[in-house]
Length: 164
Image (cartoon, rainbow, N blue to C red; front, side, top):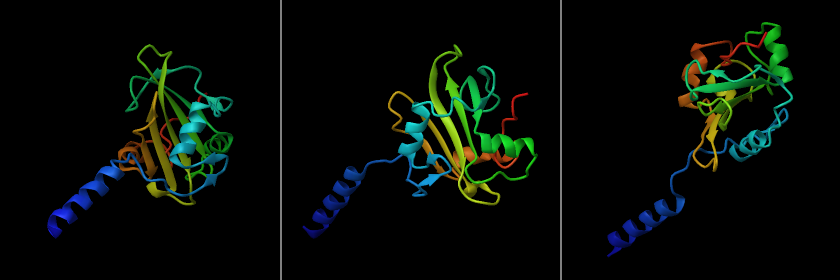
């Protein structure tokens, strides 16, 4: 009987918790961004990055993130990239709009924010989320799905060059 009760308790606990797409990193606000998963989702959905330096139009994606993308760079990151810095300062942010193949309909976003000094995947929080619900996002510091491509390309995990 005790074994049955214990098994039911564990099953109930697992069912109540359910699968989670991520764990909030608990870093709070870094630069101008609430780095929680909910904070990043709200930031990109509100378009708070649209005044930043950006690629002129959606383009064919080089690696992942779907067919067409457009990348935005916050001023801190753009200045660091222009200076040719080997690592970027805390608060550097890049946002990638992810488009349907028509190049007009945004279906999601990828965002990277530098959260600690130095180099390496754990100095960045990576995020990729898709609408309309944004309830199954890639999110986290040094996220394994994200850092592979970002580490192999670009400088300090920023794979897209500044638009010229």
